[in-house]
Length: 434
Image 1 (cartoon, one colour):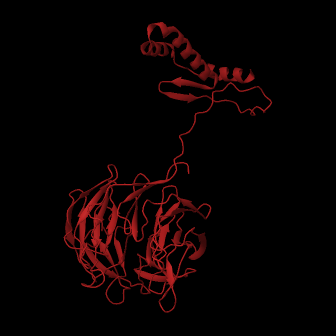
Image 2 (cartoon, one colour):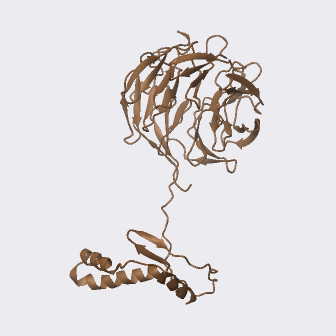
C-alpha cells in the first residue's frame, strides 16, 4: 500500500487530461449496442490499472511517472499483480536465398550505388580473351536484373570505384590469359542517366590491379601495370585526369588493398611466392613505407576493415620458395594501425582461399565460399568472425559452392553473392538476435 500511496501522490501533482469521453466514444463506435456498457467498464478498468502501474496515457503517447526506488519483492512475497511483459519478436536464423538470374553471368565487378542498386560491369564472355562492354543493374527491392548502357570500351580484370558524387569509375583491364596488354582506358558511369562517358586515360596500362577511393575523393590505382607492376597513379574526378604517384616497394600479384581510417592505404601479401610483407601509402606525401610482416605469406586472401579501425586478414594460400603450392591457410591475423603490429586472430573452421569477407552492420565478418586450391574443391560453407571475442562460428551454408565470387553488402544489411562457381546469385540474411 505504501507503494500505491506514493504513486497516487505523484499523480496528484500532474495535470492529466480527461480521457473518459474518448474511451467511451471509441468503445461505443467499435461494438454492437448490447455490448457497449461492459466494454466501457473494461476500458475504465484498464486505464485505472495503467495509472496504478505508474503511467498515464496522453494522446497517442505514454508519460512515464517517477517511482521511488524500492527493492524487488523476494520469492516469498505475494505474487505480483503486474501485467506480464510483452514478448519480443522471434529471432530469425541466418539464411541464404536464391535471387534473380543475371542477364549475363560473367560480371567482373559489383558496385553498390547510392540508391541501393548494384552495378555489374564487364568480365569475359564465352569467347576466351574477349572482354565485355555490357553492364547491368540489380534491384534488391524486386530481386531482378536489368540492362543499363554499354560501356564505351571493353573491360576485363579491371577495377570499378564509386566516387563521392555517386558516379562509378571503371579503369584498366585487358585480355585474360594473353592477347592485348593492360589497358590505359577509363570511363565514368552516371546512374542518373544510365550512360557512360570516357574520361582521361591512365598514365600506364593496368590489369588485375588494385583501386580504392581516398578520403579526399581521389582514386588510387596500384600494381597490375606492364613491366614492374609496382607503379601507382591517382585519378582526380574534378579534372578527369591521372597523375603518377610513388611506386610500391615490392612487386605484388593478388594482394589486398584497404583504406584505413586515417586516410592511409594498407597493401598486404600477394606475389607468386606468397609475400608476408605489407606496406602503407600516404596520400599526403605520395610515398609508400614498409611495415611489419604478417606471420604467414598469403595469396588469394581477404582484408577487411573492422569497426575499431584494425584490419582482419584471412585465409589464402602460400607457396614454397620455388613457387610451388604449399598449403591453404585457415589462419587469420589483425593489423593495428595505431602501433603497426600484427597479431593472431584465431583460425577459421575451414581453410580456404579465393573466398569473400564482408563486414556486417553488427561488426561481425562473414567469410563465405572459396576453395581448397590444391584439390579443386569449392566450398558452400560460411562462417562468422566476432571481433569482440576473437572467435569463429559456423553460419548457414550457401545454396551453391563458389570460389572467386563477389560479395556486396546491401543497404538493408543483407549480402549479395554472385559470380564464379555458381550460376544463381543468392542473398545472405544475417537474421536477428543471433
